[in-house]
Image (cartoon, rainbow, N blue to C red; front, side, top):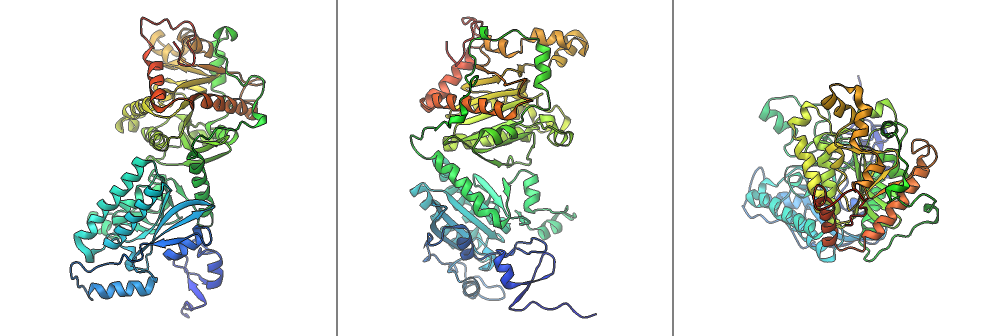
Length: 571
């Protein structure tokens, strides 16, 4: 049998599928294999050419070069390896830094080059990453770090190890100052990079198939003597396990980065006021704040409508209410619960963080999303996004629709109660406007974890309760048969909740209900959100926190009568 043809200057063999690809075609495809989608490595300079506006890149830090601080010699002296890295990469070090723009938005970019000693992290790379971070902090512009690294550089010993601390403290300064950090992790990103700057971004993006982890797979096999699962340490594996936000094909990277930067650019404009488009104002948009204006209704009917699978979900509202929505994923601890959806959104000129429970309309999605019942890692994801809102001064909008938190064995093992408690506490102290909308079921603590707001609104065919009517019936009346009676006794209807001051306003649903008119319902939600955020934007962070504190401190206070429809957090 004849051996396969060899790669030449004109042809490249794909390491993913083994096929030969014409080099010029590969270049036109951004070095992505047309047969299997394998992403070939790019040089640091190629990343600048791909991602930033043409002619906008201005490099800095080129005087920073590796030093042989240990006099290290393996099969050859370290200085010879440095010289070889320079020849192969065309760079003076394994990283390059530049100021640039992406679709006009200024950024600082630091890109590692695997061609220079495997992109390994030594003193020079640590210094360049740190300088890029300081530059971003000084100019208060986003930092984009593109990583391709085999780990810390052995030839520099403990000096290389110290770069993990050096760069991590620079990331901490950026976080504290509210400066956006974006990681783009490519193949491979291991060791010293992944254990420091490459996994500390506010948003972490990876290319398809990129290998990302701490210890390399061969080291793991030799250490624990176990076979590793399929796709272990791939970008997809990390995404499924909550470690990264997005897996983005190379051809889409610039678009996704542009959306992300634009959302933050809008948020950063001082004094920006929302511009309400003409089609958002309709009769019935204004929330009802007087319970006397609402008719008495059968609580069981409201519960049934709240559970109707045709009602808009959080993803529906994100599509209809917002002008743009970029979903972010993962709790950074071990999971990405599909029962919680969240990310950055644009609402008539202002950027917000949106989080909500997600059920679904079809059986397949309902099962995949656990019928909207979050696991602990779902609440950890929500908590992470709450922190995101606080760090960047973004208003928080939540959509509440869950029967309750998932009561399973693993949920209890992994701290369901703690996860819920953390969210409730975090929402109570957020220094940004918080508006919560109950769009369906408001089941117990699992709902309250996303419903501690300056304003809490509810759709007229929704409910909020300490327990489900069926659960109440079982506990107090012996079985589920008295669920209708329990629903009446729980006073869970929007009219009762408004009278008790639990909610601040009730949104009327168009036609026969939200389940029949998604778009019209979303327009009413949008108008109410814009109006409410407009009001809250007048308050200082300390006032927002104090108002929220007072709103919840009053419940159960015998000096206050909660029978007059307190509304709007008033007294």
